[in-house]
Amino acid sequence: MMAPRLVVVGGGISGLAAAWAARRLADERGQPLEILVLERSAVVGGKARSIARDGWLVEAGPSGFLGGRPAMERLVQEAGLSSDVVPAGVASSRRFVYRAGRMRSIVPNPIALARNGVLSVRGIGRMLLEPFIPRRLETGDETVWDFAARRLGREVADRMVRPMALGIFAGDARRLSLGSAFPRMAALEREHGSLIRGMIARKGKTSSGALSSFRHGMQSLPLALARSGRFTVRCNATVEALARADDQWQVMVAGDTAAIPADGVVLAGEPWAMASLLRPHDLTAAEALDAIPCPPIAVVALGFAPAAAARIPAGFGVLITRDEGFRMLGNLWETHLYPERSPEGHVLVRAMLGGAVDPGIGSLSEEEVVQLAKAEVARLYGITDPPVFQQVERVARAIPQYEVGHRERVARVEQALARLATIDATGFGLRGVAFADAASDGVQTGVRMAARLLGNPVETGAMVGSG
Ligand SMILES: Cc1cc2nc3c(=O)[nH]c(=O)nc-3n(C[C@H](O)[C@H](O)[C@H](O)COP(=O)(O)OP(=O)(O)OC[C@H]3O[C@@H](n4cnc5c(N)ncnc54)[C@H](O)[C@@H]3O)c2cc1C
Image (cartoon, rainbow, N blue to C red):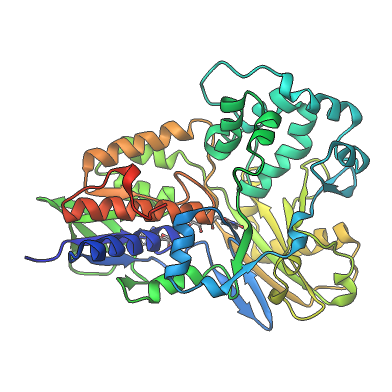
């Protein structure tokens, strides 16, 4: 009997994690399974792309990942990368917002927040009333901003939560869904009736995990998985269409004369990319995926020599509230997190532009984006020396926005995939936007599909080691 064949469309972390986990399950069961990953680009990694040049290491996408996801931790260990994990420096706990003309440090202490000018005394008073605000009775979705304003007051919503949504999603807190974008916050209210009471109750019991990266950058993990030889990876292979014939899928790759037959398919592309492949098979699922916006982002990395670098504070970075006359969403101070990313004494700053609050950034030329970032970074820190290094990365459709209604959209996709039975989907457009979430979701999806193809489906709750 021929081994069943699984085709994974997309060689980002979610697709490679799916392939890896499918192979692991087949090996554990001693059953043959052929696995092929098809990737549109010339190299695997998707949004995770680490560019090493002239002593600098620039991340085009994610610069780190949060611990506390067992499936991700197991993947790192099995890929042989445990000794390459680099924890972020202690400075990573120092985070700033730029408000009313200057940088202000965010400290989880009401007196310090007032002293630093992040909140007014009145705003702090309102925030401290939070444990006495009744739990919301309606079960429907609400925006992140509405939730924050209702529980913590408008000032916290505007001055702290809006920048937080920019930092994580490059998103607009007035459109993002609380339940999908920040499910842990929603759970605190649901389970404890209050964020503050919930955080006190959970103190020491749960941890969101430490921030880390890899010595050679975030692309290390997808590269290690792809090079393991445990499944086949074909780059420069764009899947143009999926057709169904008898019990099999026919996977059409651009430029190929013959389709690739597959017994099962895992879609691991961006929401819009998966939508076009699913359209002929389920219009509702395709429309739900197309309704997940992915606005453009530009990342401009600027390296500064010691004299200018001294003007940049030690810390994680700064987020800029929208009415301060800057177009940048914020800056990450890479060197303070991972010192080996820049030459001795120099500092690497990554300026982020675009996102849901400024999609127009996608229509600027590369030169215009670089000039804009250089001018704004110089103004923010009062730097007069030009940068000694620069690298620009533009992503036309970047971080998926989990807007209100996201959960229903994902449910429609999941229902359609269940009907189609031998096709599944993963990736950061669906159930978690962060790198470790995408990896964990990939593992779960790979296990689910392999079990189906090998003839003994696993219960979701019983996925051994899938985290
Ligand atoms: C600028 C930026 C900064 C970020 N920063 C962080 C961070 O600091 N921390 C963090 O945790 N997360 C961060 N993220 C999110 C993180 O990058 C993602 O969670 C993760 O990389 C998503 O992986 P994925 O495999 O789901 O998708 P992708 O990486 O997008 O991979 C999808 C792959 O599918 C391929 N593909 C699509 N369609 C086809 C097709 N038809 N045929 C063949 N191949 C196809 C694509 O080429 C791509 O390689 C950031 C993202 C961006 C854009």
